[in-house]
Amino acid sequence: MLSYKHGYHAGNHADVIKHIILLYLYNIEKKGENSISYIDTHSGNGIYKYISRYMDKNKEYKDGIKKIQNYKGNNILIKNYLSTITKITGKNNYYPGSPIFISSISNKKDKLFFCELHNNEYDLLKKNLNNYTNIKVLNVDGFNFTFNKVNKEKNYFIFVDPSYEIKDDFDKVEHILNNIDNLFSKSKIIIWYPVLNILENDDFIQNIRKKGIGNIINIEVPIMKYGDNIGLQGSGLLLINFTNRSIMKNLKEVIQEIQNILKKEENSTRAKLRYL
Ligand SMILES: C[S@@+](CC[C@H](N)C(=O)[O-])C[C@H]1O[C@@H](n2cnc3c(N)ncnc32)[C@H](O)[C@@H]1O
Image (cartoon, helix red, strand yellow):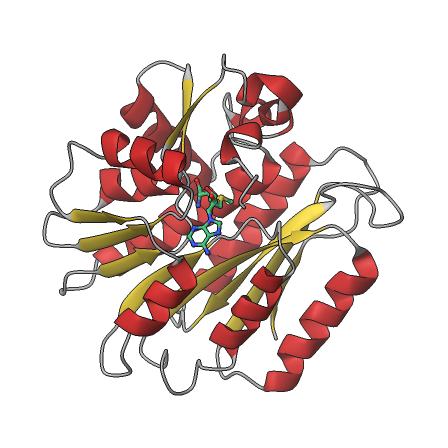
């Protein structure tokens, strides 16, 4: 039984970071000559309304998109993210989810697969993506779909964004990491993870390091000083098989800028950018 609803969290600090990086990396991929085969394993419903029983309940967006939406700095990745939102929503009443972000910037020749297991969210997502012709919305388990669909000869762009409401999600992410060198060697993968418990987070990262995966970049953006706090203290991304040379410099600049804007404490733990 799935109880998680992304509407309660849409536009929060974790969404801001993941969507800025997702858009940046997809746009780089678009510059290549071939069409992109994209899988969003955990899609959500696609678009969220600020004034609604969900987003309005905990108002998490106030610590996320609301802090950055009037950005006046020069970072091109942040500016591109904000202008993409404006193009999608026109006014500020809605915050887009990953399926709408990517559909809106995709080329017609790209093939986009969106998996969503929750029946209501799936129905809404189908409606919300009605205007796009290069997509397939699937009411399936995104992990299973990915393992069935991907083969080692083909290059996929895969976005893995589970809610981690069940511990199982960490095991399934690990299963993907254990198959990078064979099944996913030609694919590019972005995996999101929450930072809730510092010791567990350290174990998670250590465990990945031990796997010795060839090309894995880790970004982590704390919004406070890591400690005994309860709740989402920060969030991270694993970027696998992204080899473009300009990436590290651009990522370094953007995560620093994002942390400066979104941090809740002056002495927040430093943002991390590293190869694992
Ligand atoms: C964190 S939200 C996704 C947010 C979305 N990627 C975005 O950035 O806007 C996770 C979603 O995955 C769905 N879900 C949970 N387990 C799933 C699974 N095994 N396969 C597909 N969807 C799943 C949940 O119903 C929820 O809508």
